[in-house]
Length: 328
Image 1 (tube, helix red, strand yellow):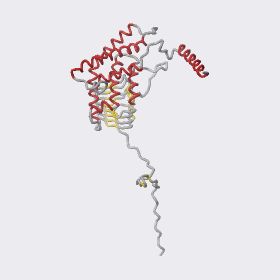
Image 2 (cartoon, helix red, strand yellow):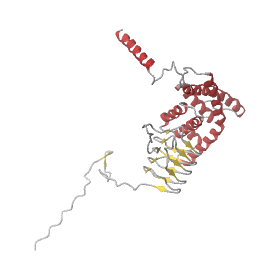
Image 3 (cartoon, one colour):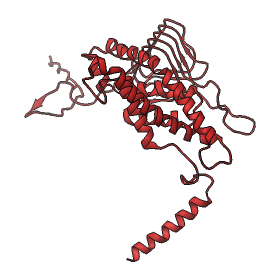
Image 4 (spheres, helix red, strand yellow):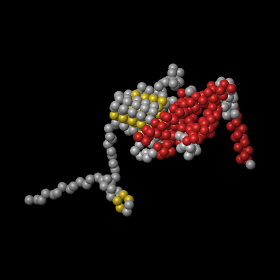
């Protein structure tokens, strides 16, 4: 009983902190996007863009249009509401969603709906690129169902279009959802061309102002990041300027490579080897690699095995004792 009373006291103190705070705003005072609703929106986009793979299956051809109509109508309603909540942050002095925010939410949602056929065609190219770029891929079905890059790129294609429409909050929340589920961190501002493939994908980072051309392939652990963060006279970070590199068409970047800087351009058809650190431009058709490191190996290189386990031996070569000369 005493513990419950103390919890009540803690609740009062926390409520007082929330009411007095201008840093973390209370949801009761300010309309904010719903994490649950955004997950539902991404699920609906997945069902629409990759129809037949997610959601309802075995859809006959005669039912395709009507089924899509239902999916798109529900998606429009959800998206319009969450966009309105995101736009609410631009309405100074208003605690609730105003009529203007609702109208703009519906307008932006419809604009996004118009882009869906284009996004679908682009995703087809991404799936084809994954199939062409990975000899382990057995089918398009396997790629769509199991490759993390397709999930991450699907979310990015949607989030990027909303980013271009100037929607705050929502695109970034979407991209971080994909990041959490795939290990692939693509900022919604990054501009990515056709037929993009991320092999494996874990640890990939693509910054906000990155520009990626067509037919680009990157591997796990690749970072396309900023070299530095310029500041103004007051010491504040300058935002909205190019900080991240540009990859031209037909570039391949292998695992662990780091490419930094807004002035850095990787020329068309170039190949960047693993673990390379690049902070300046590379001409078209260039192959960049680091010298193989010298290996220091300790242990038994002969691989002696006894009862299924390796047996350690002294690997230092034994010095031969010189033969004694016979006395004459």
